[in-house]
Image (cartoon, rainbow, N blue to C red; front, side, top):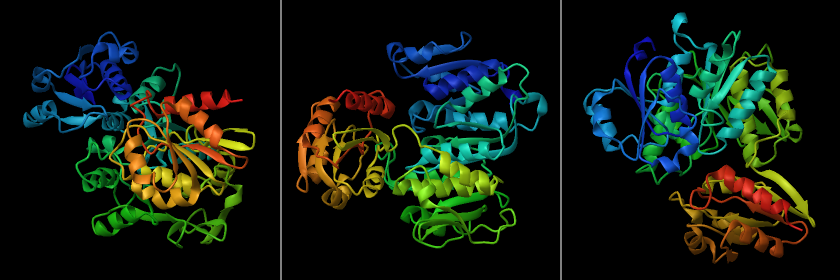
Length: 476
């Protein structure tokens, strides 16, 4: 990134990624301007974290910025087809994302330019659902196995923030073995050279169709995770997911990395579930004769059908990255899961309250409901992401005792599912929880799993989940 010094760089989008990219490029000597379509009063929490050398242009995207820049860095929330980016593209100005920027800096071969040295490369996880749990569990395994890592991307800190943090530590060797990243379809749209040594595509189900014009466009974005991989790299795929399997067979001749699978239903080359055990069928794993039993599923701390898949994906990636088998097994026994992902909140009068605020699409709610044997009182709704709520029909009829709806999509969900289950419309999340408490009997589960985005009523899914937990904890 020597070329950045003294060059004019425009950052599009002042959010977490934009702040990290702007501050890092400023440190590296670039002339940085950040532009955001939002007004200043909507961005105060980000503005206060920007270096004073960085220029801010808020409320618009002036054309001159995109005509005169040497490089444009786009935050994930910004669509790549907006007219200012088309203007820059027409003038031959490079356009990359914050993930690509971080990758180029970390993987620089020039030691004098390195702010951080990464010995072994990137481990990257994408998919519609399960990304955060799988990525965090993978990082847990990598560290348990004795490796040093950075965790970031679409989870926790932006990678550029992590580079800055590590580079600022005095007497720090600034060397890691792996960079473990969760990557979204939005981030993958803006990569160029990004190449993980081990990548995983967990699943593909309809999501973000309010941004993408078709499922094909969404799938194409996801599949970019392996576009730069070579024969020396690994790709881990879900054999049970229709779209993932279809993608594999359609691109069979063009996929260069070595491919392994995980499956709950089939004995595959990779990791699979059979008779209550997870088996490893990966050759040359530390001299083990394959297939061998890795762990009894009852010993895995995180629960739920979808978490079995997440556990297998993370385990396959860790083993392929060279993590010792015992470290993988110990991690599966110890890792307790993430906030807002089927998180147990409390039991009151024999009723369990579960926070699954990260269930922001229909497929995520389907996986959550599949794991319950007790009657479920489901709280759902929020901002629609062009989801097909009718896909929940069979599970709602089988599992859900009462459906309580909130937010902008409540009418659409009621139209799709209201004929199959007792349905209540709630004015707020607090109202929804109080209705759920009145409806619930001993042995029932009250589940917040919205199948929608949160932005109609909350700052983000985390804000929604924490408010739910606060309300539940105050129940008497």
